[in-house]
Image (tube, rainbow, N blue to C red):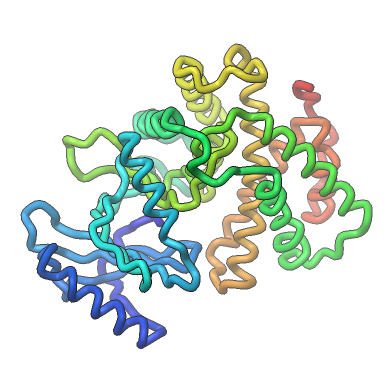
Length: 371
């Protein structure tokens, strides 16, 4: 979920039966929370089947609330509730769940505001420009929140980000991006290349220490609070959280899905994050706490897994779910994939194959990296 300023967009329903269920549930909340039904409007819709509405209140303590519409046959809200509780206990700023109709998939939440970190940055810099340098402060707040979340990690609470899940996500790239979007009939050599490189990526990812992973920790899911008394960033879209590589969320933050930061800025924030997790004692394996180069390599390889996955997801959203706006951002992910793959000799077969498919002239120069 990334809540925006779509205050003038009314709520429409394709399913009248679900509309009736919603109206009935909303009626049970009106008096307790002083809701004003006539102010109901669309706040946002995301890549899933969830929608979010905003509704005003006459309560002196809350100007507005957020309502989640998550059809139970398509979305499971149990994970949203459990992760929200985990994050709240860790001291993070997340929406509070005030009312939940579990059978119908409606939820009343506190409103963290309408200004995402992406919007906040966009007010200060031109997001249409490549490789921008955004303001530093909100990214320091972001890594503060990330370290707080990771320090709360405990085993056997969240699902594991294991080899099976990593492989399933990687497979989205050849299935949806290459085969269905680019309409490439992959030959035996290309399939072998994909399989071999994917195994290298998974091996690298699984070598990382395990912590709580938000799994979509980026500027559209971080909120600038309206209150001057609140120093924390709000956190949204956490329902897919897992226990997995410590490198995932920092890679997600610094290789954003919708805009690209300058390489100097990416390195600066990643170094600052690395220093904080070193001091916290979260990392001590593989020499990472002593060697930023090793840690940076692991972040890049984790980011590569995410880039391949997201390119596949964005193609699937267009071709299967009729949401074409996401596909417009796939060139950014192909650029991320190429910039990482060309730096490591083990990944050069992948960049050569992608360049052939994308009709890009390959640059034969590449780094040997750390082995």
